[in-house]
Length: 596
Image (cartoon, rainbow, N blue to C red; front, side, top):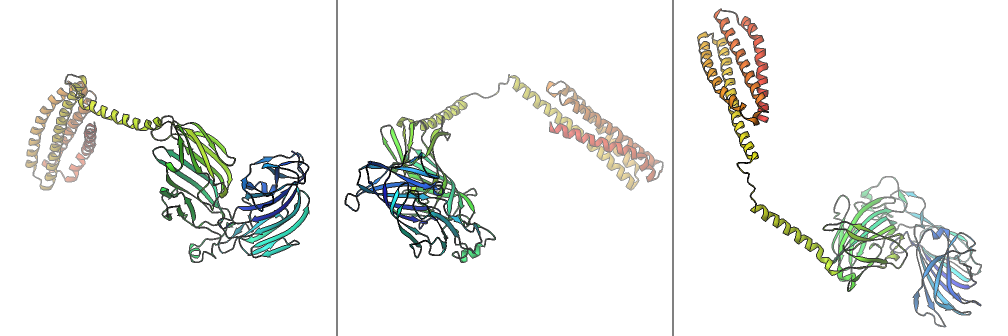
């Protein structure tokens, strides 16, 4: 593409800050364009130097037809990026298509609005809580134009009249926070003259590094919006200690560039509004509602100083009829694209529109270039998943908060899918319960499982009787031990012999009771696993019984011979060690059988 020769009369206004945000730079250009001929003009080229083009977030142009009138009808014009074969320097060019061709000698007025982000650089880059925030801005006093410029002037509006320094040229005037340059006449194409401004700006640099908006459509009457924010203060980084007491006492002096709240401008009929982060619900929020709008004022858990980050989520529901339009099976969603917080500059914005399962013929349209693709989300009561339209754009500013559309087809019969699934599920559960209640789940007395269970219960009864006999034998052993203690205290040998005689009789009776029990256990096949342990228990008890009787006889014999107590204890010491070991083994076997 070659550059045609036109003459422009240009008046430029550059605003370095609005009343709400500090990071974007708004540049407004008013051009009075004349076509000296002889060619017919159908487009106008806009040029931006490399310093600005990489930060260009939004660009729009509109025209005012003159024809002797100061202003005519306003028309928004299509813009597209172009590559020039003979461009003289590193610059980015855009072509503005005019509503109609301009013949030689005719003129028109062209209004251009450009928004740049991250164009202000904090200088110094780090400040303490008590310092003010100073920023540096670089530009050119001449508007970069591929055409000859007949007349041009520049007005720079700063957010504050406290200016550290600025480039002083001829025809420079300062009025408070506004600096004017020019007018300059008869400038050749691609004229540049660098200028810088170093000024105070304590307006917060609220930047969303990433914002994910999920818009879920339910044809049962609701549009659920969930927004996940990753926020950073993009201004001068805070250094040193932070005092919350000083900040609350003197916020204008101790943390003037910090921000402690944001305002989300929600639709008037927003409902079920919430605000939370990873910890949980954040109670420092206020919702103001009237007939025209809803405002959600949110406060992070801590004031946001330069370089500090936070992450949170807000969500709300909207009436479906306010945003979804339909004609037969064709439907489209019409919602705003950007964040409801106009204070934010968004590095990456991802909008996910979750459509009902069964939607088809899906497409999306936006008034500016975006990346888009589709994915699938699995949710409750879904079979194949819900189609999701994903729209992504970088470098988003409040001017992008325009309406976009998502078109799709959806049959009303598909709405019955989930209710039918629920009804079918409940019917299946009820049918299963009815079948279970009428089914005979009892076990037949002739079945193998019933017989095995009955046999095991009989085995358990026999084992309990064996344990009872063993415990009675152990009780007799304890009685014999008690008689020996009485003998050592009183010396009454006859009483000790009587206790021995009584114990012998009882132990013989218990031995008779044990024999049929062991015989019965051997007859049961289900007792094969536990029978060896029972037999081992009986054998250990008999061995213990023998040792106890031997100890008793030895002690009584010693007292009859008038032996000393030390001599008697020495004679029974070895037997006592064996008795103690055998008692422990018997207790372990009883515990093992109980566990089984």
